[in-house]
Length: 58
Image 1 (cartoon, rainbow, N blue to C red):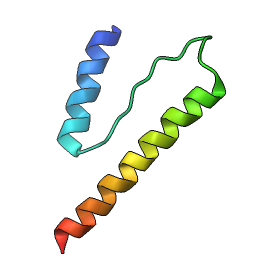
Image 2: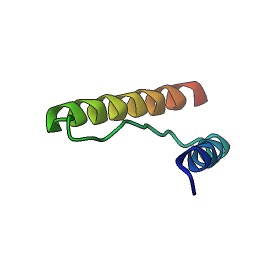
Image 3: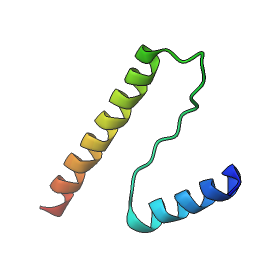
């Protein structure tokens, strides 16, 4: 499947099931530190979202 088609499908499924996704380009110019930083930031955002959802339920 072309990338644009799969991207739309992934977005649809993620929205339907409330799944957080994070895309970032991978190429030779990315260093491990940059990838690590992006992943750490994404994980922090997920934790904050989870914490705020727990608070709003109570």
